[in-house]
Every structure is written in C-alpha cells, then in structure tokens.
Length: 111
Image (cartoon, rainbow, N blue to C red; front, side, top):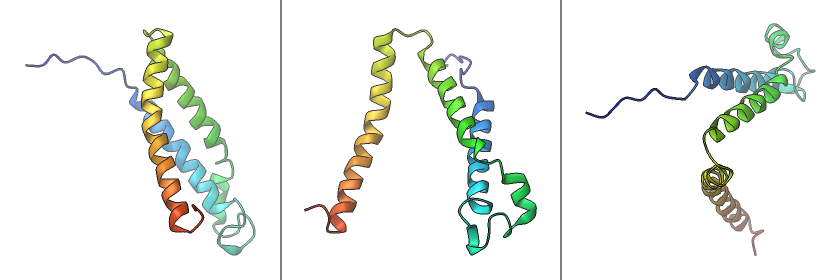
C-alpha cells in the first residue's frame, strides 16, 4: 500500500486564482473597451458595479503566481530550481512557438 504524504498544494490559492481570472473576465465583458457596442458600464450596469475593479485581478493573479513560484523553490538548490523551471516552461514554450509558425504558414506569412 503506498504511503500517503500530505500534499503541499494550497487549494485556497487555486480558488483565489479562479477569482482573479473571473474578475478580469467580468471586467472585460462589462467595462473594458465599450463592450457590446455601448458606452462602458451601460450594457450590464448592475454587473459593472461589481466588476469595475476587475483589472485588479491581474495583480492578484501575479501576486499569487509569485508566491507559488517561491514555494516551489523551498528545499531546492538554485540549480535544482532552475532546472525544474526550465523543464516546466520549455515544453509549452516550444509548443506555442511551433503552433505560431504553423499559423503563420497557414495564413501565407511564413514563407
């Protein structure tokens, strides 16, 4: 039977990141850049009151992400941390690069 170790994941941070993302989405749908073709905040006035500060969700999201990155460094050397970050980020970066090139090729801009 496998041993059960307590998870170091803080699920409350996942919830806060969801709240931050929803704040930003709400802001974009109700306040930002004349949504729905009408002046800011007039399409959904009741909701706009609640989402007018949704831009703060970006700062909340980055604050939480910085905290999580610092937590991931705990108990590791600089080399171990750097290797883990590079490994984690290189695959998605490479996939996005290839997808971008493919998109450019499909639009005739890739040569």
